Amino acid sequence: MDMRAEAPSPRTERARRRGGPVFSIKGLLKVFGDDKPYVALKDVELTVENGEFLCLLGASGCGKSTLLNLLAGFEKPSGGELLYNSKPIAGPGRERVMFFQDANAALLPWQTVQQNVEFGLKLQGLLHNQGWRERIEECLELVGLAEHRHKVPSEISGGMRQRLQIARALAVEPDVLLMDEPFAALDAITRRRMHEALLDVWQREKRTVVFVTHDIMEALTLADRIAVMSVGPGSRIAHIIEIKQPRPRNPADPELGHLFAHLEHLLHGVSPEESMQ
Amino acid sequence: MSAVVSSDTLQHEKTQKMRRPRLLSAKQREIIRRLGFIATSFLMAFVVWYVVSYYVTGPFLIPPPSKVIAAFFPMAESGQLLNDIGMSLSRVAVGYSFGSVIGLTLGLFMGRVRVLHDLLDPIVQTARFLSPTAMIPIVIIWFGIGELAKYALVFWGTVSLVLINTIAGVLRTPKIRQNAALCLGASEAQIFRLIVLPSAVPFIVIGMRLALASAFVSIIPAELLAADSGLGYLLQQSSLLLQTDRIFVALVVICVVGFLTDQLFYWSTTLFLRRYLAVV
Image (cartoon, rainbow over all chains, first blue to last red; front, side):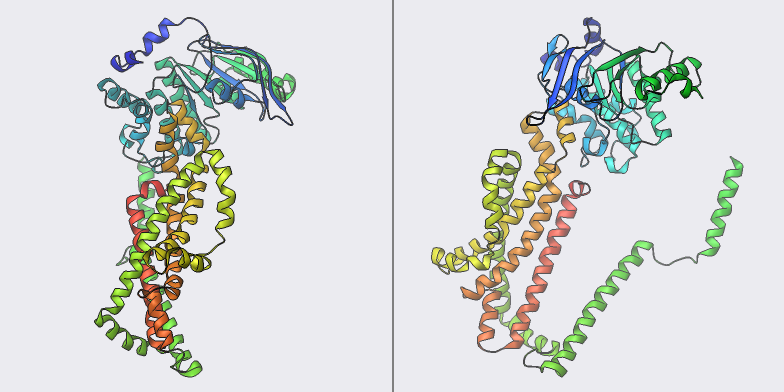
C-alpha cells in the first residue's frame, strides 16, 4: 500500500509480475432467499486470463449481473470456488472496479467532472501526491473530458457521463474493469463511439475487462472471448467462443457473420440457416 | 459545407423577418408575468375583503383593509408589535434549531442503523399524530408557562418532520452510488460522509422547510394559551377586548413574517446547497 503512494504508476510492473488467471471460478453456486430459495447460478466454471477482454453474453435474467456482482464482491457465493489472483474474494476492492449502466446514480452529481475522477484517490488520501495528480490529468485526457473538467455531470451528455465513469475507474489503477451493460441505455451512434473509446483505453492500458451484455453484436465487436450463459434458473457458462479477428472489427466480415449466426442459435435456439436469411 | 451555411443564413433571415425585435429577454418577460399575477392575486383578495366587510358582515366582524392599516401604525410606532414579532421569532428560532438538530442527527442514525430504525420507527410513526396543540396542557404542567414550554412545543412541531424526511433521504441514497464508492476503496465512514449525507440533502431540506412552517403554526396556539408576549398573546388580548382590527393586524403579520422566513430559507438553501439540490 505504501509503495503505491511513493511509486505513482506501478501498473505495468504489476501486470508483468502476475502470470496466472485473474479470476478462477469452479463449481460456483449462488442461491437467493431463504424461504423460497432461487438458484441463480449453478456449476459455473470460468477462468479469466490477465489482460483479456471477456464478454458475458446471455438473455435477460440469466444471472450475468449476479456473476459480475460476485466478481466485484458485492455478493457472496453460496458454494463453490471463486478466486481472484488465487485468493477468495472477501468483498469489494479497488483492484476490481465496477462500471454501471446508470451513470447518474453511480457518479456524484454534486461534484465536478474533475472531482469525480479524483474521488477514488481522495478516498485513499492520495489526492495531493504529485504522481497521482498527473494520473488524473492523464485519465481526463484519455477519455477526452479535459476541457469539461469544471462542469457537473448534469451538464454533460450521456456518452460523456459514461466516459467520466471510465476515467474515474482508471484513476485508481484497477487491475480489472467490471462492466454491467454499460452502454445499453445509449443511442446507437454514441454507443459505437463508446466501443471505440473503450477499446482504445483497453489497448493502451492493458487491463482485464469483464463486460456483461445481451447484445451479440456488441460482444463480437469487443471481446477476445465470449462466455455464453444458459437461461436461468441455475444458469451456468454453457459455451465459450474465442474471437481471433483483429480489431477494429468490420461488422461485414463473413467470419463474424458466421459467429453471429452461431451465437444467435446458442442464445435463442434459432437455427443458423434461419438466421442467415 | 457552403451549401449548409447558405441554407442556415436563409433560415436566419426568415426568422428575423417573422419576429419583431423584443425589448426584453424571455426570462425578463417571465418575471414580469409572474409579478403581474402576484399583484393581481392580492388586488383580488383586497377587493373581496372590502366587499365582504362593507356589504356582508359589516366592518366590526371583518374590519376593512383601511381600518386594519389604520390600526397597524400606532401598534408599530409603540414598538409593541415589533416586540411581539421578536418574541415569537426567537421562540421559533430556538425550538426549530433544537428540533432540526435532533431530527437530523437521529434521522441519519436511524436511516443507517437498521436495528435503531426498527426499534424507534413504531414510536415515531404513532407519536407524530400528537400535534403541538394537543401537547400544550401537559407541557404547561411540565414546564409552566415560561419560555421553556414554548421551546418544547415548537420543538415538538419540528422534530418529527425533519426526522422522517432525513430517514427517507438516507434510505433513498442509490445503492449503486454506494457500491461504486466501495469499489473505489471507500470505508464505511467515508460512504456515510461523502455519499449518503450529500445524497440525502434534498430530502433534509424539504423536511426542514416543512418543519419551519410547522414551527410557525405551533407557536401561535402555545402563545394563545400560555404567554404574556408574542403574536399569539397579541391575538388573545385583542380578542378579549373585541378589537377585531388589531386581530387582523396580527393575522396579516403572521402571514407576512411566515412567508418572509420561508423565502429566506428557500433562497439561502438554493444559494448554498444548489449543487446538492439539483439532482435527487
